[in-house]
Image 1 (tube, rainbow, N blue to C red):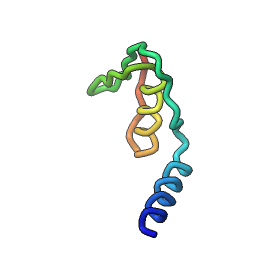
Image 2: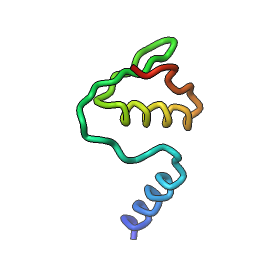
Image 3: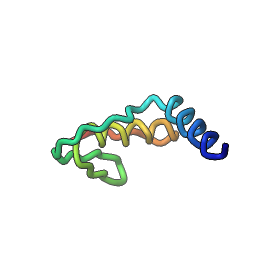
Image 4: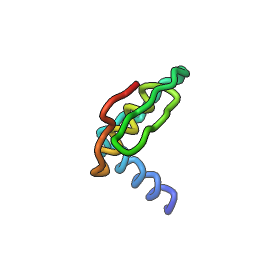
Length: 66
């Protein structure tokens, strides 16, 4: 029973997220720019999703993607 409850909780958390859970597998490095740091990711979809997750957690999204 505990495993079923755990799976239902994970699915509920993912359903509340507005960020995409799908990442493209192409390798095309991109960088997300913030005032105080840079974030490097394997491709644009990954960096876009990280920006979205930051915004969902109350942090600013990336200013620019390169």
